[in-house]
Every structure is written in structure tokens, then in C-alpha cells.
Amino acid sequence: MSGNPKPEALPGLIAKGLEMVEQRLRQSNGAQIYDSIKAQLTYMKQTIEAHAKPSDEKLDSLTLGIYAAREFETSDPAFADVLFDVEYLFKRL
Image (cartoon, rainbow, N blue to C red; front, side, top):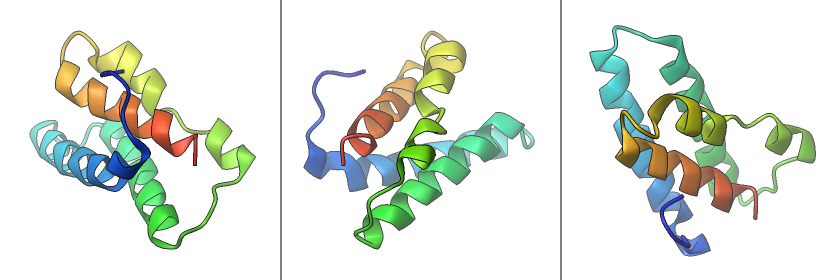
């Protein structure tokens, strides 16, 4: 995680994550991991826009932090930081 992100930064971080994942999805020729990340970020965006609270079950199913640590922390640290921060903040809504 890149420091202590502030809760008010979450919508912008989600937007940044969606932008980054779209770029990586195009470059990867459709790697499934990016589809999963995009789906999770889209869910988070929709939840925030609806001013809804995610269910505990949905929170438990999030894997952005796992992907960030296993797949991107060393190869794409900027992307990993966004994923870590988004999941951290979203789980504290």
C-alpha cells in the first residue's frame, strides 16, 4: 500500500484503476486477470455512486490486494499501489 490513503480519495482511485486496467487489458490481448480486476473496480464504482454499503460476503470476495501482491507488486508497482489502496479504502466504507 502506498501510505495512508484518505477515504475521500476512493472515487478518484477507482477511476484511476479503471483507466489503468483498460490500458493493460488492451496491451495484454484480453488476459483474464484484467477482466476480473475491471469487474471488481466497476462493482466498487457502482456501489459508491449508489451510496450503498457492500455486503460482508462481497467484501470477502475481493481479490485486488491478492492480485496486486502476487502479480504486480514487482512488475507494475504503480498499478499494484492503486489496487492496494482501492481495496483498503473500499473495505473500510
